[in-house]
Image (cartoon, rainbow, N blue to C red; front, side, top):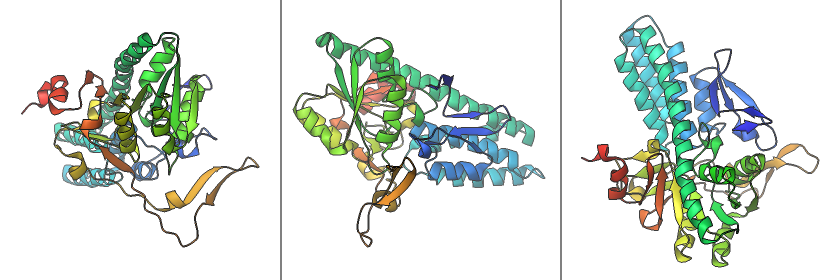
Length: 370
C-alpha cells in the first residue's frame, strides 16, 4: 500500500541488507520504520506487537529464522542446526494462537533439512523468507478479488446505495505483508467504484480498529465510522449493516475460527439479524490438525495492563498513557475467542469462497483429504 505517496510492504529487507518493519504501536499518530537487527529483535517485535496480524507474524518468523541463521555458530553443522532449532522454539513461543507462525517456522525447518552446507542453508532460508512474504501478498490480493464478488452481489441488490460493512480488529495490509484479508475486498470494491462504508470497531483493549483499520481506510479514502465494540448488534438490528468481514488467526478443518476477542459476539448478532458473516484468510491460517476450535485452539492471555491502561494522543498533542480503573482493580485479558463454524456464512481464501465446513474447505484444498 501507499503512505504519503510511497509504496510499502509491512516487512522487507532494506537497501542496507537489514530487516525493516512498520512500527504498529506508534500508529496512527506516528509513521515509523523500525530496523530489526537479530532474532532477539524479531521475538520482541512479535511479542510486543510492533508487528501483529496472522500473516505478518508468519512472515516475521520466516525472516527471523534468516536472521538467526546469519548469527548461528559456524564451527560445525551440528552446532548450527542446534542453534536454529533453539531459535525456532523461541520464535514459536512468542504468540501461541495464530497458526501462521508455526506454519512459517516449519517451512524454514524444511529448508534447513534440504541444505548440505551452512552457507547453503543460510541461502535457502533467506529465499524461503522472501517466498513466504511474496506468497502472503499474492494470496491477500486474490482474497480481495474473491471477496469483491460478494460485495458486487450486495450492490446489485441495492443499486446506487451504499454497502455498509462491519469489521472487527485490523485485518488490513498492516496485519499481512500487503492488501490484508478482511479489508482486501473493501479496497477492491472501492477501486471498482462501488459505494462502500465501513463500521470500524474500536477493538479494545489494544484498539487496533481505532488506530490501524481507521488509519488504513482514511489513508485510502474509504468512508468509515469508528464505533464502540458493543455497537454492532444495534446497527444490525436497525438495518445499518449489509455484511460482516473479519480476519482470522487460526481456522480448524471443520471451519471454527479463532480471531480477536469479540468476534464471536459479532457472529451471534449477525446470525440473529440474518446478516452474512464472512471470514477472510490465507491458507496459511488453516490448521488441518484441529477439528474443534473451542477445545483445541490455544487462546493467548496477555497482560491485564493492556485493559487497565490506554495510550493515545493527549489534548496537548503529546502521546501519553492513562489508567482507566481504580489502582487495585485487577484485569484479565484474553486476546482471542473462537467463533463456531455454524455461525459463519463462508470463508474467503486465495482459492475462492467456501462454506465453513470440513467438506467445503476440502473442496478448495483436496490435497488435505486423508
